[in-house]
Image (tube, rainbow, N blue to C red):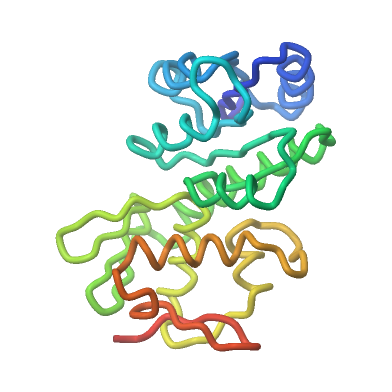
Length: 228
């Protein structure tokens, strides 16, 4: 088996379905059926990615996302029957990297898991050769995948990391929404996808109290990172 996937859902049928397809895709699978067990599995089994339902007993999935983000930046993919845009945006805003609505295609979920792992572990940790990227008072360590502002460490999700790496590799360059989406999510761009807006907004909040200090919006064009 290869990378380890934690499947957290209170429905046994869902866990069994995902286990079948993920193991066929050469992933190792561990399971949890409630929020508290999910957190315990994160600490004990140290999965490489977490697939997480929202409506679970004990501790709901959104609270679980918040707790995971206090100690880990592993990719988190929410799989939920809650399909409203507000729920999706909230999940991403709290730190999830992807959001898939039920009912889902298990082959698509497996493909998205593979994409997230490639993005975070294979590309994120290795492609830059361990060099540090510096823009103004920001420094991105591409080996440990950590961002610092002065002496302060800023916690990033895997998507946020890839977006920052894109911006900091090319400060001053304007990137379209399509370029940002394909870099951050590794998928074909979906017009009017709110994930970009949410992730950029979250990044700005983490970077500075002035939302436009580092990342500028160019209406009709895209976004760029200021050189200084």
